[in-house]
Length: 115
Length: 115
Image 1 (cartoon, helix red, strand yellow):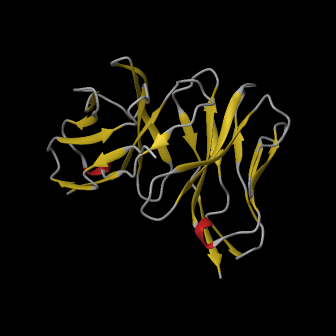
Image 2 (tube, one colour):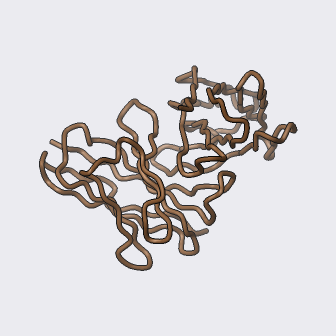
Image 3 (cartoon, one colour):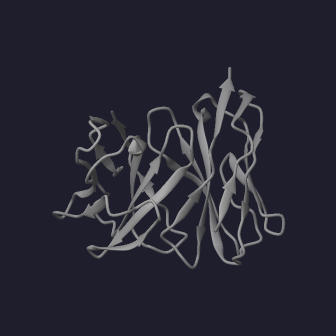
């Protein structure tokens, strides 16, 4: 079964600085999708960025980018120019291309942004 | 912007009682999901639902659980006889398509406390 590991329960970053959140996963599949979700306090999870495993190019969404290393099964999230509104729980998630219904989440990383 | 909504935000119940958690997915979405997150643990997939039937369920989703789409808007999760270990945050999600790349939109969750 696929597992997702986020080894950093908490991270902090200074406003305007850059932070990288780690995520590794375990799978024997070759086709899958990876996601980063953000959950602000008392709010629902929202999608930050996603990556298709067959694409070599790393996904980018404005200040958010990923470093996808398929061979290493690593999918880290980089937040540039951090803002106070980036403070949230961040969840890494894996979704198989063979079983689309089952999304596997990591335990989450709580990001604090210091002014 | 359309959102997934869930009611109630917090439900307290006695062990052995039945509870129904309600969700209103985004109106043009066809795929619906329930997840749960026990305090301090990972978000876990429970069940997915499409075309008025369960398309996938996890080992957590035993006979105590059922889902229903009673009308054109609501999507419910019923726990027949609650146990202490059912205490968790329950998240509903919906997506327009079922393929793996498609974004799942999450509700804010219902916190279930079983006493």
